[in-house]
Image (cartoon, rainbow over all chains, first blue to last red; front, top):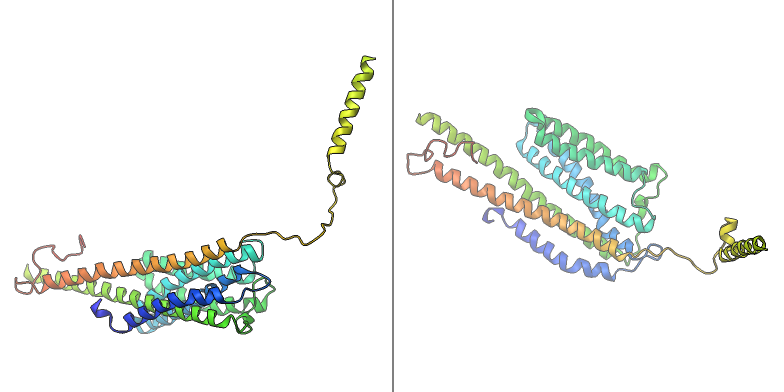
Length: 227
Length: 102
């Protein structure tokens, strides 16, 4: 852990403080009169969905750098962000139906927001599968998939405004009751810190794996030279 | 006479059944209910499941990344040790740092 620098311990400490503070803020936030207690899923469901969008954009940015400049760092960033997109996408897609079961009476509706979110999640799973099992050109194929996923993000975001849907509209955060804002923004900050922490660690893992490969090649060269 | 009693028994039984079945059920109608009626699904299990899933997934991923990082870092240290070993800046032996078994 020595090589992880100062930033990670600071982020970990902030996350620990967040874990202590945020549950209290959520518990003391007012209960929404129509939906009741189940509306409290909102405080983590929305940040997880935003992290899905952010991870997809970061993955596409890294993929662009890899595709057009051959940047290995870009590729590592894309790999890390791609996994986080799947992680936070899964969180959003599991918590949403749990909320929906109570609020709408059903776990799932094939409406525009839910379907386009599922599509984005599946594209990011495709990204990971292409990286792992795509063979020699797998990374390039995955990078192209990440660009498709990034194009899907604005569609997912605006779907509730374009089509008629049972999902709340994009104005829900802007018009949030002032008494609910501290709980929401502190939960959002906590999720952002955790996301940054995971991204940094995951990128470090990719860099270390690359170092192992280099050392192995060096060792093989030495073996050849000693023969 | 016997037939009369038999018919009377059947008629009485049919009457008893007809009186036992609510009229609304026979009529196949929807009737309004007085007062507020709600389908009460408890919310707390859904909230607990949602929060539990998020934190188990995040912590599980954190543990996976941290363990992988520890393993790969140890591999790097081992490879460096072998490459800078006492046998003239070379690997300890054939296959010591090859792709197999690592």
